[in-house]
Length: 256
Image (cartoon, rainbow, N blue to C red):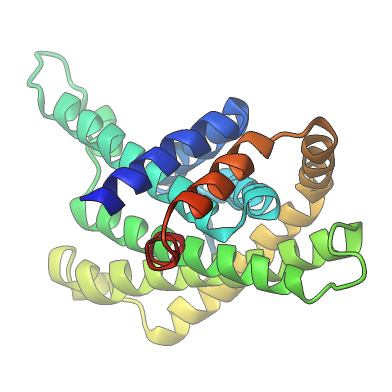
């Protein structure tokens, strides 16, 4: 029970410490990304992209910023918070779509009502890809011993972790939706092969990486500004005091 209380307290302090616009943009990107995923905007033999592509880069960019300043554990906590928020928003959308009306809102209902297995697939995919992105981003950053806070370190860790994280997100979502659930609930004609899922994941990750390359200078500028202004110092002080007031076993358990 004490560990749960400590985790909740840590989460509260973290959300107070991270500038609210970053958290807001991150949650907004997660919610909007799932809505836009209902429309396929590119459908070629070698490339498939849904509307979520236009905001998915923002989710990964904000993750990279949080990892860079606060570490992977903090970024994972924010990921969980965003997922819970998205599930809550999806529940509201579904309930609104279920309300009977005299006018025809079938188009509205089909988009906002969603499909349960698409929501499940996207939630699992984003959770796993977030874990991969955050820990990989942090691990790559640790290899830059001489200048871990420089541009080369930031861009290297962002580009590599984003590409692999986006690949995991696309691959897991594609396999669950079009290889597992789709053939059962939509019919066997909607099934994708593993090769199709793999190619869509790779090409989608490349396209999303290009968007990350375009906007990552903004992320680097934000990180440098946070360091100059001491953003996050209150959270670091809290973590240090918690470490000193807890025994080593409890602290290591919470850190994990």
